[in-house]
Image (tube, rainbow, N blue to C red; front, side, top):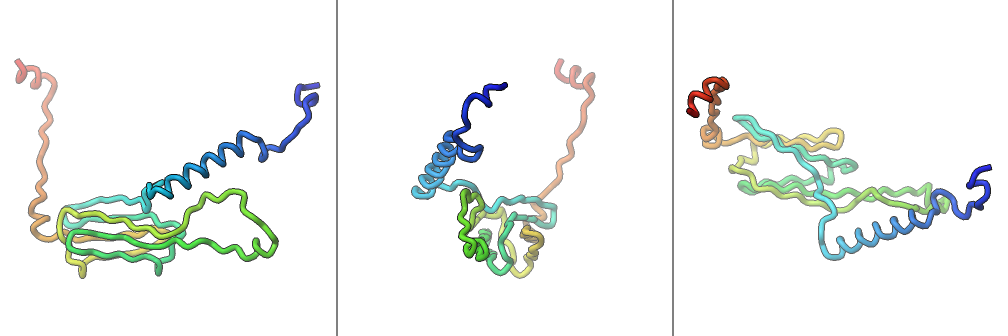
Length: 165
C-alpha cells in the first residue's frame, strides 16, 4: 500500500489548484501588459544579412496569408505590416466545445526599421514561402563602394612577445 492509496484524490491532473493559479497569474500579467501598451513579444522576428551587393531581410510570419502582408519602403525606412487572423473552428462551436487555454496569438502587427542606405524600391525583390517573407534589397553604388574588406594579419606567439618587449 502506498500513500496515494490512503489519501483520496480530490482533483485530476488538469485541475490542480496551483496549476490553475499559475494560469490565472499568466492571464493577469498578459492582460496588464496589453492594457498599458507594453509589447509581450517583438513580432515578427527577423534576420538581417548582407553581402557587398545587397542586404537580405527574412521575417517569420507563421499562419499569415500572403494577401495580408504589406511591405513599404520610404527612402531608407522599411515597414512590414500585416494581420494574422483568428482561426474559426465552426465544428467546435457546433459541438459546444470551449477552449481551456489559448496561447496562439493573432491580430495586426507592424515592424519598422531604418536601413543604413536608401534603396531603389523598384529593384527590391520579395518572396513569401512556408511562412517566411524574404526581401532582397540591392545596395546603391555609393554603399557598395563604402564597404571595404580589411585584411587581418596573424602574428605568431613568438613574434608577439618580441613586439611587446
